[in-house]
Length: 359
Image 1 (cartoon, one colour):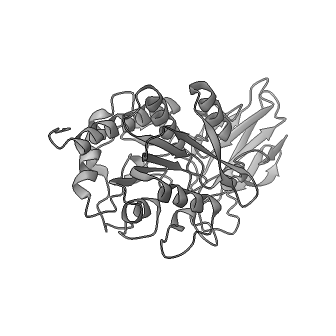
Image 2 (cartoon, rainbow, N blue to C red):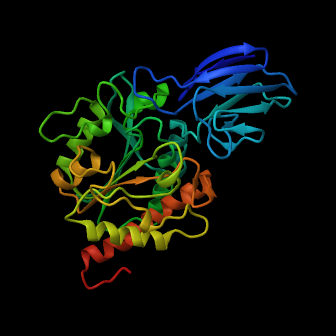
């Protein structure tokens, strides 16, 4: 058998210590210490049990995520600790993928767009010459702008974004167009990079209005914002590995001047999240200038509000493993995305008609 990272999203450094034991570490590729990993085991024998050990805490509460097709993911059964896990291979498991969390393959987004007949176009060419996908719907000048994967490894936000698009396809918000860039750091997504703190520059820090953007995708997003009247802008992210606030769905509030609106939206989202969703509680949001959440730091949300003039712009952080006791699944993340869309529709009614109280 062999371990490989030769697939979309692959990331691992592996050393075989004996026939059934492997020492693993994240491939940081010159970046800062982070926790993302994903690898494939090929050629394991039926009944063979292998132990995979990391050089740090790299395993979540439910063990590794496992898939046989890079599309459908589940939490693996078997023994695990924060630093490793064991897995017994069954007959027919000739190729098994393991990852830190549920990955979101670009092919899944392509399939979603075919299913819903959503028009996908090319935003720009990436630094490595790949076509960065972009979805644009509607002819209205006022626009909702959605982005994800400014940090390449943060794939849980893509599931929430998918839910938003599914809800929008059924119940679009009247008078608004929608633009969606699902993989901002597209090269990093394909290559399996960490993305957070990317050297020499993080994609989500490439929004300083005083300087040209270094990355083609960010330049194109800024050009889109200049060409359209952006009313709302949402950036879907995943937080740190786990623990504390990272086990919630939360909004880092960046803008004092629209703080009441950010709180109002968060309360609407709290109400919109039913039992099939990741629970969201507005009390979990991070107030401005609290701990790491610094107001004015160059990022998508700051640029869209302070420079592009969006009435509401924020990041939504979706936990990798659990939110208030509910384990992550594709289904509950998608349901959460539907709730985000419903909450934004309720917010928009009040925004366009001050006589309406959305709460």
